[in-house]
Structure formats: C-alpha cells, structure tokens
Image 1: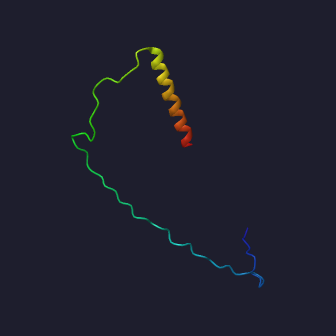
Image 2: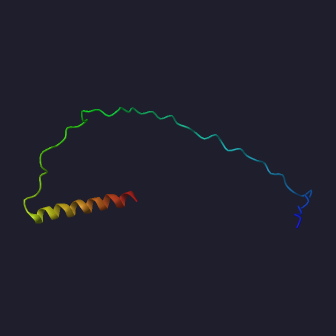
Image 3: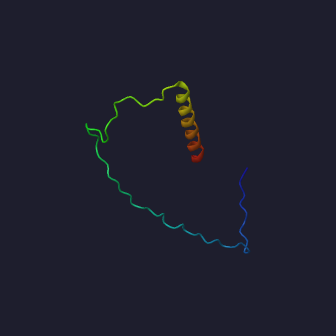
Length: 76
C-alpha cells in the first residue's frame, strides 16, 4: 500500500530550530602516586580492646550496628 503524504497548506506555520548551548567542561586535576613498599600510616599490630564480658561485647556490637544502619539510611 503506497504511503500518501499530506500536502502542505499555506496556513502551516514555520518552526524555528534552536541550537542548544555548548556544554560546560571544567578541568579537574589531582595528584596521584604509585604504591610504595612503606605504608602511609602505621599499622596497629596489638590486639583490639574488647570488653571483658560477653554482655559488654554484645552491647558494643549492637551500638555499632545501629550506627551503621543510621548512616546507611541517611545516604538514601
């Protein structure tokens, strides 16, 4: 089936085509270095200071998990 185009009438309005502005590009520089054999910070090799009782350890773990959940919700 042939496609029939509509004929243009004299009452059609012309459209003005606007060109978008050029995007703004900002130059960003940063300093980076290759890894070295020496650490940038001193490594802690002593044991972590755990609480003396299981109840205290569970309380600290619960507080840590609550804080992590709060920070995660704040990101969303």
